[in-house]
Length: 304
Image (cartoon, rainbow, N blue to C red; front, side, top):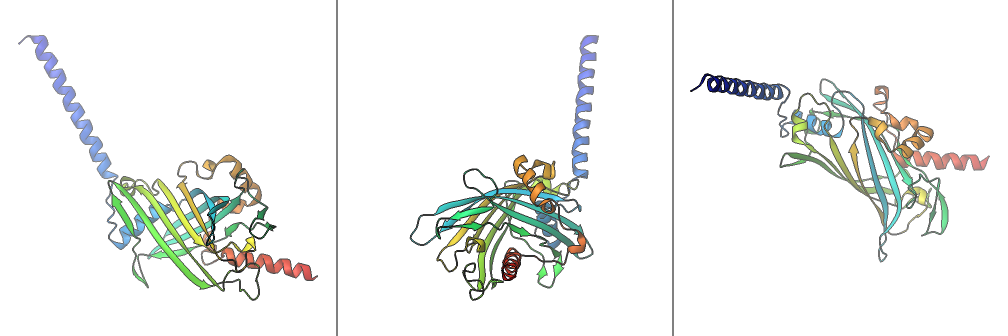
């Protein structure tokens, strides 16, 4: 073997050693910043769910979604009535027993063709123009306990092929703030009934990465609900289906909301571009409750 061949082999061997060391170093670095969340345990499940839905590091999380409002009346063909834009602003603040969850959300009803936010909407079923009242939940906040009064925390999930989908199939029925007797044009029932089917879909690797307090997440939601009170449908048979799909905006936050809609929100409801402060964590403001205040104020003004 010549001297040049020996030198070449030494160089190649050295390069292989360096490459191997680099690979091991990268693997070790990844291992150092990765931890496995056991989603079967209360703490791991809660951390994973909130990391998917929000940000467990206390940072503001922004989710944006687009959807439609579809009428479903017995004996009639389903009809797309409006489009929707929705913004969900959240923060998670860790404490001794779990997380304080701060949330502010809005759903804006928009023209089915132009996509522009509506001030009024012509209702083809009752043949009149109706004043639009957008869904604005000023503060929908709560506390998530790792081990609370209802037992250990658990959000249902599906894990498959390196991906995790948390889901919540919520069915509700409670006394409505709008009674048929006092609000006949706006109330379909004395009960507020419906369903909300929620999904948060993310990568397992993001959940396990200890360097990330928020995972990249795609969302979907299907709402099944009564006629929106401002539609003035009263006791009409039927219901609405509201499907929507969205995404958590991790990098640019509110800046990644489509520009025309962001500009409209900055002008008309800027408070919904930020989560509520921690001082408001006990407050609850619902769409139906806020609409009732709106109608009561209009009635009081008409009496003067």
